[in-house]
Length: 236
Image (cartoon, rainbow, N blue to C red; front, side, top):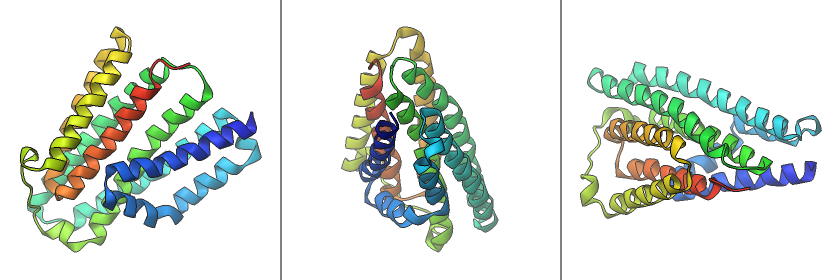
């Protein structure tokens, strides 16, 4: 059992790299650069401990890392607010408010999907899906702080309908969302709808703060999440 759990966690960590690739090249580069981050190192050390080899232990390691990334994200956001011009501060504050609102209802959606499954691998998948977006948000905020243009220069965005990559990625989001809804019991569908609406509100607020590549990163990450959940739902 211990070997099986550790192998499952290794696959999850590998899956995070796949998700980063799906989210766009720049996200993959940021994830690669951050590979030696102390939070990641601490999580890997925790996952490798014999006394944390149970499902509960592995989930605890992931949750500890998630909380650490949340703290890092909060710290970076406060640093960012201190640097951005007053005219953009409100946009960043709206992005953060919608980010937190989305994450709250997203947790409910993840739990609802996992409730339709049987097996420790799906519990571990849920733990990873709780962790990765928080990690990505923290790294994105760090990247903005480290890039002066990300703070001072207003982004220039075409409408999504004028950007073929955005059109394609949005179609993928809709496809996998419908696929997930169709696999879930009717009583759970309102939770999915609320999570998807909250994500769209977060996306709408956040794309105004970045460029087209950052927009594709956000949409691509959603594609990866919905695809994973649609594969999980209803499995034994």
